Length: 121
Image 1 (tube, rainbow, N blue to C red):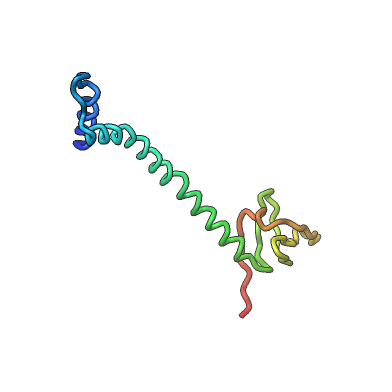
Image 2: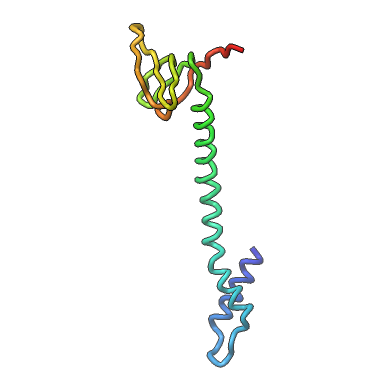
């Protein structure tokens, strides 16, 4: 708080000097820096509140997609619940319903994993 008041006073004093006096180069640089401090702080806060959590969610999603195995029960973005019966590259084949209808979907369409299949060692 004291630093911002000091910078504000320097900037105000530099702006109110008479035309006969020249401000020292250091004072003008500090005054210029004082004008950009709120903008810099705003970008830092936006980065911490928006970008960092988004990257964390993307990382968790990639880990979930890469850990899918045959037998997992999943929910798609469309709300379809099914069990994975085949994985080929980035396409999953899932079984849905009592009739065991098979659907092919992309991995990115998986919203969440309901039950992980028991891994065989």
